[in-house]
Length: 222
Image (tube, rainbow, N blue to C red; front, side):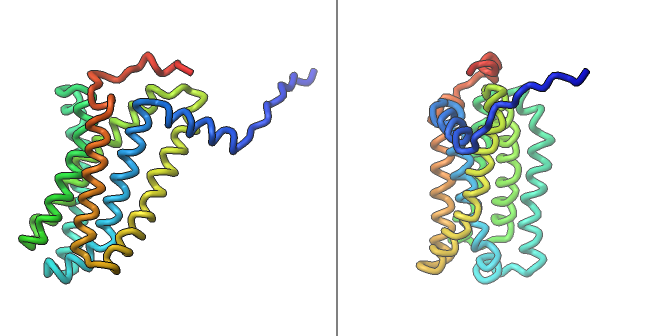
């Protein structure tokens, strides 16, 4: 006997896209997390657009020194990932979510500080903070998103999140190039700091920052 075939319901891309977008926009936790990630990536790539010429011409760094400061980003990510379990045990979940955006803001302010005091060490510290804090955000925000998103919406929400955050990167690089061309590299550092300030304020004022633990009971909600 041939196995019975169950008809697969037709899927419509635009309909699913609208459903995923509507779900995120109406959720008091998912929306601020998405906005935080978008502004973080926007600010980070505004900075990245001008950092190498800025480091060479304004900070007076050699090619190897520029590479070392950029490498501090990866070192920070490793350190943040290693510290994540201990931090998660000691702090409320919402506090953990605040660490990444706060470190991003602090890192941008440290980089702005090089306008007044050009320094290899300040640039190194800035990129270390950009790696160490935000990796905690990646772990925490992904965990929360998966916990509170219904199974049938998981792919759509993840796709929307990836599209928005990765899409902010070329937009940030383009914005950084435009600001630098219109004004100068100094203005780019200030603009990046402004974006980092926005993302820190968004998450700090959201209900996610007040979570004591992951609300797992929402995982089955529709």
